Amino acid sequence: MSKLFPLLVEVPIACFRQSHAREYAETYPVPPPATVYGMLLSCVGEVNRYQHIGVKLAIAMLSSPTKSTVIRTFRRFKKREISDPTNARPDFQELLTDTRFIVCVDSSQEKNSPTLQERLENAFTHPETIDRFGGLCLGESRDLVNSIQRFTISTDEYYEWLTQDPDGLLTLPYWVDHVGSRGTKWQRYRLELSSLNPRVWTQIKTD
Image (cartoon, rainbow, N blue to C red):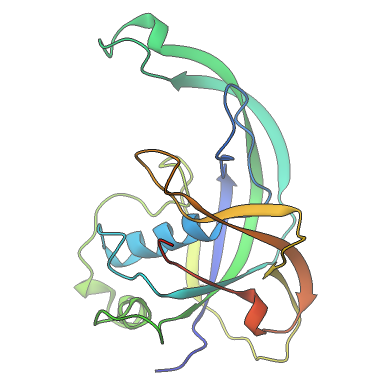
């Protein structure tokens, strides 16, 4: 199984909502590894996000998404009755337009079989065998993926990789606790124009 499994992803409109955002829904400028991992699980029809713990992802931006702000209705369950009008209120949300990136998948440290890389390869070779539901999204269900396809790169080509850096200005989640924030795991990054190297890989794990 090849270590280098690149995919090209294009998303017209997306919001990678910052974990600490409250009324004003700010977006991360790039897709976090946790969000990309969720999209890949959806692509192969996997609903158990623990299934492919150990997989490594490398993300390189091909575009500089344009940021805009819209006003939309958010639902926050302050009252037990879901139809209570105080549960819905308008707030501002940031959106990104034209998000294009490469994601490379390395399943060499996964324990389960078939691995995520094997399942993705099968999804592109035999799409009729995939059992999944809903649209393929990157983040919110509204943010549909326009295109995901195999891509070819060489290890000496330069791209703007999301690179681990303890002094980086981007703090992004690689694992999200959907019940509470206590279990969410973070890593600091910076975007660096470079070839594929060990610092661009993020392992999906719960610790």
